[in-house]
Length: 424
Ligand code: GLY
Ligand code: MN
Ligand code: MN
Image (cartoon, rainbow, N blue to C red):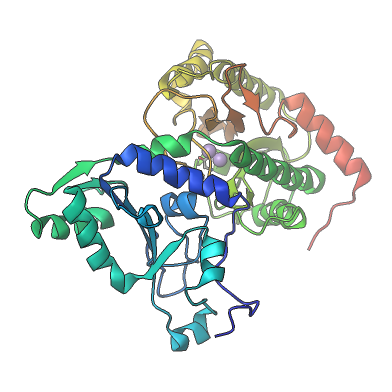
């Protein structure tokens, strides 16, 4: 098969150096201390309703995004160093690949592209895992545990069957290991999130320039997302929320099909992806370019809450400390019951990224997104930015996107004076 054909579906979508992926796998091997770990890419949606997205643990360790059914085996006690990490890929199926795209044979080119020396087809996994488990007598769960109403996590299911066949083989909980690793971003990962934030700024600039009374919410959404495409981003971090008037108070509003009315606010919560990493930004805009007194009062309050929360973002802080910093500001204004969600989440390969449930460390990237929702007044205000935690203080990666009521009005007025609205 011509492995040079330029139509391979086997690609590393994240532009992070192979050495970094190798370092991550090495760190995981160290953390496993000889116990066996198995990281699964997951399955594709057979109905093509959703594009395949490998589990983020798998992508984090390989950079691979398009090999459904793949698995990564960690066997730290293998005498052969080249076999301590083994990648398993589904067998080639030329008939299926006529539909789904070319996949390369196992060989030097594939090894070089994956940066992994030992690659097998998945039909080899049972015997390789058995050999490894006989040696280690210890299996460590790395994939997230499932709730009782969901299927058992894939590695637990495989490990249970393996442990049944090997005397004195234990199954241990290591499900915090990869969450903790992923929560501390490398320089390259921060650069990807920063670039996603920069491109998100282009989309928001298009919103500032084109928002007009009587436009539909989906038109505003289209302007934002066109800005991302023009900035070079193909993928959204999540479905854009563009909710005007009452809909600005609906946290995960997705219909985006109502007319934006003169005098209302629109809550715009959106983000581009870059090289697999997400940005997640919210701005609340006056549809006609000018906040009313009451809208400005609420907007300024939410900004004060966000400022207090960002100030509390330091290594060692926990989300509930940061949440309380914002909530205290809103409580003092008598609106405690109007802040109905929590302050934020980790951000990375997933928009709601792996949460280690531990104090924040330098290198974490989180969102800070307080909101006040007053449905009776058709006022929902959320302000969301992406924050890098450092020992020298928080760094707002999305600070270039106009944020205060005054900055937003100025940006909208300026953008409107230099661009006629693009409708259609
Ligand atoms: N857009 C979802 C969130 O902000 O978490
Ligand atoms: Mn958001
Ligand atoms: Mn968010």
